[in-house]
Image 1 (tube, helix red, strand yellow):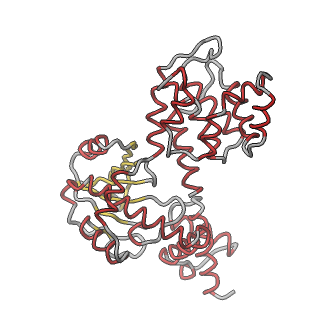
Image 2: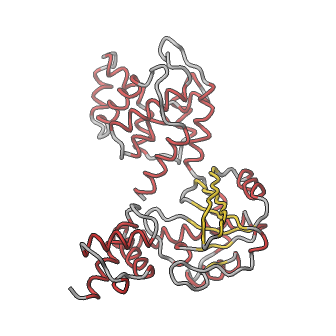
Image 3: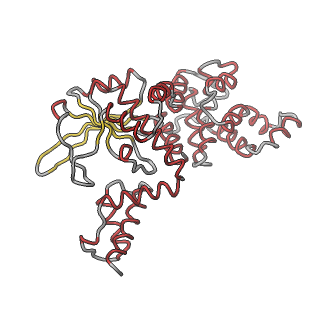
Length: 368
């Protein structure tokens, strides 16, 4: 087999491993790919460069997601990055990585560098604007030296990673692991100019305003569900306790039934969300609060989940039963009712609210 063909095959296989999120590092991906393709030792000269793998990843993204969807997603991620950069303007933010270069793949995040001596100052800004995030301190040994990296992983429409460097490093040159050259990064003004060049006719002021008004539905779900922890239910029907615990039980059971059906699982988690708003008419209150944030199918399942109980105990009228049976989502409504009735056990272990929201968010990212 020609060396050039081996190189291309390894590059494709490594790209597939990274595109499917089975590997996150170029080196590990290319070594695993080389063992799979060549079934033995491969000369270093036959291994593809990181840049070659990156190009294959981009080709896969366009092939599987479609060119129009790929371009739309890339533009949205760039605008979302600019929006967050404006919020963090005091910390000299820089956009780096695949969103800037255009080499995004499934599951890509928006990578930002900011510069502050106080991590709490950056996190405080995120708190003020209502972002959910996790703090990670990563220790890395390089050339005998211990380096500590501070990351803020933000839960948003697209995942965002903010790396916080000391202020003194703001003017240092960062090296790319792909090219070995100075890393491509853009300040707020540089990104604005880049976007105007990349998308002729773009109205940046309007785009930024739209980002400010854009709501992350998963954050809304979280804030609507959290108060259910204090909503105690009638022990005759709900011996398990509060409404949040019940909702998480129902969600776990729903995941066992239809683990990849995002709309169904969203209905399972949110079916009782209105109990924190108007307990005596929780279905209508929940649907009103969720308007514009959920699909028509999810809304239908939530709207009729109480009727699913009547189906089970045969107290529903024949006409109402027929009306439900004619809907294409009838089978899922029956399953939702079964999960709702079964999710009432004391002391059973469940996911946390954060884990449930993250599960839905990951499904949404895969389906986008």
